[in-house]
Length: 171
Image (cartoon, rainbow, N blue to C red; front, side, top):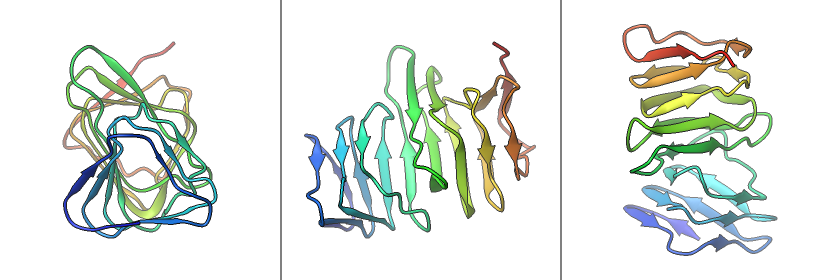
Protein backbone atom coordinates (compact mmCIF):
# COMPACT_ATOMS: atom_id res chain seq x y z
CA UNK A 1 0.00 0.00 0.00
CA UNK A 2 1.35 3.43 -0.89
CA UNK A 3 -0.28 6.58 0.47
CA UNK A 4 0.24 9.88 -1.32
CA UNK A 5 -1.28 13.35 -0.91
CA UNK A 6 -4.14 14.15 1.44
CA UNK A 7 -5.24 12.66 4.73
CA UNK A 8 -6.43 9.09 5.12
CA UNK A 9 -8.15 8.36 8.47
CA UNK A 10 -8.69 4.70 9.26
CA UNK A 11 -12.25 3.64 10.00
CA UNK A 12 -11.38 0.10 11.13
CA UNK A 13 -8.29 -1.64 12.48
CA UNK A 14 -5.52 -2.25 9.94
CA UNK A 15 -3.62 -5.56 9.70
CA UNK A 16 -0.90 -5.88 7.08
CA UNK A 17 0.01 -9.40 5.92
CA UNK A 18 3.51 -10.70 6.51
CA UNK A 19 5.69 -9.66 3.57
CA UNK A 20 3.45 -6.70 2.68
CA UNK A 21 4.70 -3.09 2.66
CA UNK A 22 3.07 0.14 3.80
CA UNK A 23 4.64 3.40 2.56
CA UNK A 24 3.45 6.87 3.44
CA UNK A 25 5.00 8.61 0.43
CA UNK A 26 3.44 12.02 1.16
CA UNK A 27 0.40 13.29 3.02
CA UNK A 28 -1.04 11.87 6.22
CA UNK A 29 -2.29 8.54 7.48
CA UNK A 30 -4.43 8.93 10.62
CA UNK A 31 -4.88 5.84 12.82
CA UNK A 32 -7.94 7.64 14.20
CA UNK A 33 -8.12 5.46 17.33
CA UNK A 34 -7.89 2.21 15.33
CA UNK A 35 -5.37 -0.56 16.12
CA UNK A 36 -2.56 -1.38 13.69
CA UNK A 37 -0.74 -4.71 13.15
CA UNK A 38 2.44 -4.84 11.05
CA UNK A 39 3.97 -8.20 12.08
CA UNK A 40 6.27 -9.31 9.26
CA UNK A 41 5.38 -6.29 7.11
CA UNK A 42 7.64 -3.35 6.26
CA UNK A 43 6.97 0.33 6.94
CA UNK A 44 8.31 3.48 5.31
CA UNK A 45 7.23 6.97 6.35
CA UNK A 46 8.09 10.04 4.28
CA UNK A 47 4.88 11.83 5.29
CA UNK A 48 2.96 12.01 8.57
CA UNK A 49 1.41 9.30 10.70
CA UNK A 50 -1.19 10.72 13.11
CA UNK A 51 -2.53 8.95 16.18
CA UNK A 52 -4.36 9.71 19.40
CA UNK A 53 -2.04 7.54 21.51
CA UNK A 54 -4.68 5.05 22.66
CA UNK A 55 -4.15 2.73 19.68
CA UNK A 56 -2.43 -0.66 19.99
CA UNK A 57 0.44 -1.01 17.51
CA UNK A 58 1.80 -4.53 17.06
CA UNK A 59 4.89 -5.79 15.22
CA UNK A 60 5.99 -2.45 13.75
CA UNK A 61 9.63 -1.97 12.78
CA UNK A 62 9.91 1.81 12.98
CA UNK A 63 11.24 3.95 10.11
CA UNK A 64 13.73 6.18 11.98
CA UNK A 65 15.33 8.14 9.14
CA UNK A 66 12.34 10.14 7.88
CA UNK A 67 8.72 11.04 8.48
CA UNK A 68 6.67 12.53 11.30
CA UNK A 69 4.60 10.89 14.02
CA UNK A 70 1.94 13.26 15.38
CA UNK A 71 0.12 12.50 18.65
CA UNK A 72 -3.07 14.56 18.89
CA UNK A 73 -5.15 13.07 21.74
CA UNK A 74 -8.87 13.63 22.08
CA UNK A 75 -11.20 16.46 23.02
CA UNK A 76 -13.29 16.56 26.15
CA UNK A 77 -12.53 15.15 29.58
CA UNK A 78 -8.88 14.84 30.73
CA UNK A 79 -7.16 12.07 28.79
CA UNK A 80 -3.86 10.22 29.19
CA UNK A 81 -2.10 8.68 26.20
CA UNK A 82 1.04 6.56 25.83
CA UNK A 83 3.93 7.61 23.58
CA UNK A 84 4.90 4.34 21.90
CA UNK A 85 8.35 2.84 22.58
CA UNK A 86 9.88 1.24 19.47
CA UNK A 87 13.25 0.14 20.85
CA UNK A 88 16.74 1.61 20.46
CA UNK A 89 15.65 4.67 18.43
CA UNK A 90 12.00 5.64 18.52
CA UNK A 91 11.19 8.55 16.21
CA UNK A 92 12.60 10.83 13.54
CA UNK A 93 10.19 13.77 13.79
CA UNK A 94 7.85 13.58 16.81
CA UNK A 95 5.07 16.10 17.29
CA UNK A 96 2.69 16.37 20.24
CA UNK A 97 -0.33 18.58 19.58
CA UNK A 98 -2.94 17.75 22.22
CA UNK A 99 -6.42 18.85 21.22
CA UNK A 100 -6.85 20.55 24.59
CA UNK A 101 -4.76 21.41 27.65
CA UNK A 102 -6.05 18.35 29.58
CA UNK A 103 -4.40 15.84 27.20
CA UNK A 104 -1.33 14.21 28.79
CA UNK A 105 1.09 12.21 26.63
CA UNK A 106 3.26 9.91 28.78
CA UNK A 107 6.37 7.99 27.81
CA UNK A 108 5.82 4.22 27.94
CA UNK A 109 9.60 3.62 27.90
CA UNK A 110 12.82 5.52 27.36
CA UNK A 111 12.55 7.94 24.41
CA UNK A 112 15.37 8.25 21.88
CA UNK A 113 14.92 10.78 19.09
CA UNK A 114 16.98 10.03 15.96
CA UNK A 115 20.05 12.15 15.34
CA UNK A 116 19.18 15.18 13.20
CA UNK A 117 15.49 14.94 14.05
CA UNK A 118 13.03 17.41 15.56
CA UNK A 119 10.51 17.18 18.37
CA UNK A 120 7.67 19.64 18.79
CA UNK A 121 5.40 19.95 21.84
CA UNK A 122 2.64 22.42 20.95
CA UNK A 123 -0.41 21.26 22.89
CA UNK A 124 -1.29 19.34 26.04
CA UNK A 125 1.42 18.00 28.37
CA UNK A 126 4.36 15.78 27.44
CA UNK A 127 5.21 13.75 30.56
CA UNK A 128 8.53 11.94 30.86
CA UNK A 129 6.73 9.70 33.35
CA UNK A 130 9.98 8.61 35.06
CA UNK A 131 11.54 7.53 31.72
CA UNK A 132 14.88 8.70 30.28
CA UNK A 133 15.05 10.91 27.18
CA UNK A 134 17.85 11.20 24.60
CA UNK A 135 17.88 14.06 22.07
CA UNK A 136 21.47 13.90 20.74
CA UNK A 137 21.83 16.24 17.72
CA UNK A 138 18.04 16.70 17.68
CA UNK A 139 16.03 19.92 18.01
CA UNK A 140 13.24 20.62 20.53
CA UNK A 141 10.49 23.21 20.15
CA UNK A 142 8.19 23.48 23.18
CA UNK A 143 5.25 25.90 23.26
CA UNK A 144 3.17 23.76 25.66
CA UNK A 145 4.18 21.84 28.83
CA UNK A 146 6.88 19.26 29.52
CA UNK A 147 6.58 17.46 32.85
CA UNK A 148 9.17 15.44 34.70
CA UNK A 149 9.31 13.92 38.18
CA UNK A 150 13.04 14.53 38.61
CA UNK A 151 14.44 10.98 38.44
CA UNK A 152 14.79 10.99 34.65
CA UNK A 153 18.08 11.36 32.80
CA UNK A 154 17.88 13.77 29.89
CA UNK A 155 20.78 13.49 27.45
CA UNK A 156 21.86 15.77 24.60
CA UNK A 157 19.01 18.25 24.94
CA UNK A 158 19.57 21.80 23.80
CA UNK A 159 16.92 23.56 25.88
CA UNK A 160 14.29 25.59 24.04
CA UNK A 161 14.46 28.56 26.43
CA UNK A 162 12.18 31.10 24.77
CA UNK A 163 8.80 29.40 25.13
CA UNK A 164 6.83 26.63 26.79
CA UNK A 165 6.78 25.43 30.37
CA UNK A 166 8.72 22.76 32.28
CA UNK A 167 6.95 21.35 35.34
CA UNK A 168 8.57 19.24 38.06
CA UNK A 169 5.97 16.99 39.67
CA UNK A 170 7.76 14.77 42.20
CA UNK A 171 5.93 11.58 43.10
